[in-house]
Image (cartoon, rainbow, N blue to C red; front, top):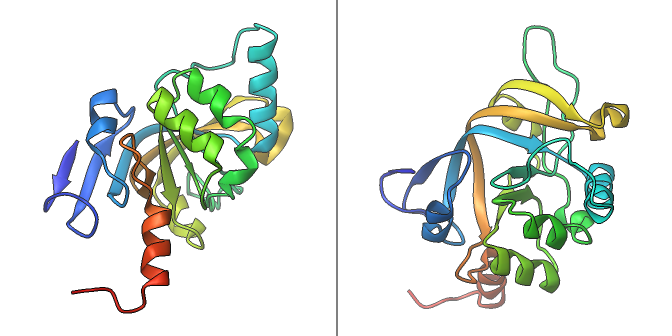
Amino acid sequence: MEAAKGRGNGRGEIRVKLPISREERESLRAGDLLLLSGRMVTARDQAHRRLVELLERGERLPFRLEGETIYYAGPSPAPEGKPSGSVGPTTASRMDPFTPRLAAEGVAAFIGKGPRSAAVRRALREHGSLYLVGVGGAAALLGSRVRGIRAVAFPELGPEAVYELEVEDFPVIVGYDLAGGDVFSHLERERDDPDPPV
């Protein structure tokens, strides 16, 4: 992990190599701006459902969950000469029913858009998983940070299949950290206090 000009929360970007180690996860705080480089996988509703069904049946998964970073996205078709099209985050709460089960399997981080349920927040803390917030409304920009892409599971689901992405300087914000920090409650406090003390 390499910080560019200090820590996050407005104090600089933190470059993080994937996979994110437990030590690195413990050092990050809600509000930190990260630039991720390395390998992650995409998975949306239907892929999550299938993964949990396989786990419940005790069947082998098509890829290893331990240490994985799962991005709630479905890449659009790649323009000619580019590895990926737009790849913006989807609303994370749609994955809330499945997240505690996947966190229990050792997933290091989940990337999505918007806040999560209390049950998910508890599961993330219990299992040492981060929740990272993707940049909404910037799907084309995020797609430009993808250096390579390949399908790894459930190809019959089309854009909802699981894809492996190789990314470089992929921007996210730490939404929930392992110490219980919550960027959403911080933003709510700022909204409720229009004239905060200087």
